[in-house]
Image 1 (spheres, helix red, strand yellow):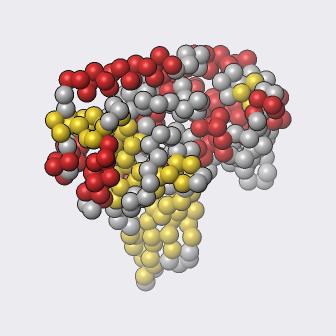
Image 2: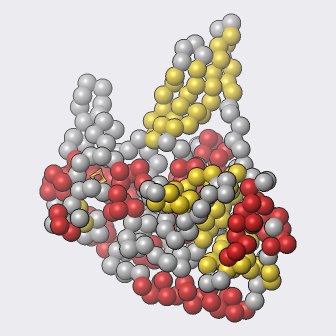
Image 3: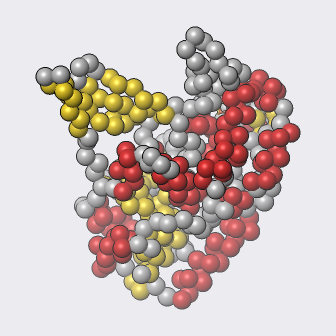
Length: 332
Ligand code: SF4
Ligand code: SF4
């Protein structure tokens, strides 16, 4: 099902949806675009937020279940997961969600992840404008959505071409049917024209094989001397998914899952203090090896979607395409 939504009807469209379901959208804030619950705030659909939408599927901290002890026996209780709609996520982040589905879907599958995933509808905004650091086309992740979603929308100038991909997507359009117009052939043509312009402007020098070669020739000692070990690259990456488990409370309490990162010095530290990845260079190399060697073996896909966030957030003078130390002036 296809339809056309004029731009001045976007807010009424979201108002209609938000009366039925929590809508998470990129909001305009002083700190830039941020995914958060939309309640009428100004939107920022021009830039991809630095914090990825995957944190609504794999939060920085979540309660997996609560445990209650009574007469020596434990009972377990899971919190309910409210239905949500992730609105205007980018094709690269959609590709990251497809990767996370494969990672958490390998047996035994991760029930906590899939409880959130099943409760979440995905509306993807195809990229008709690209960020300076984006290289999604090198990795088959964009600028047009390549992976399953419920509804695909494309900015074609005076409005959005909307295409439902699933029954949930059809329901989303039907909920606001009075705001939509029939899609026309010229809408499809304008969509194709705009996406081709973005595709043509994409860098082509960061393919999977080119990055693998950069990993092989990189000087990890020199790169490690520049890395501050802040974990920023990992926490903004939509594909990174390391976590820690801890139980809080005795005899009653909750089991928590908290995000962690292999780039942090304590991640691989063993009891007694030994650490197989003692230096920042070893940890950075492992981070890249996981994305470009280990995850492709498990999922069949590179563990990077070319969103460019790790470059944007990194305070160190590291060229993340060539994996070289860059001049400090280049970073400013
Ligand atoms: S490694 Fe960097 S460019 Fe690739 S998906 Fe993660 S944050 Fe984006
Ligand atoms: S963001 Fe940069 S400085 Fe921070 S851990 Fe990653 S590579 Fe190191």
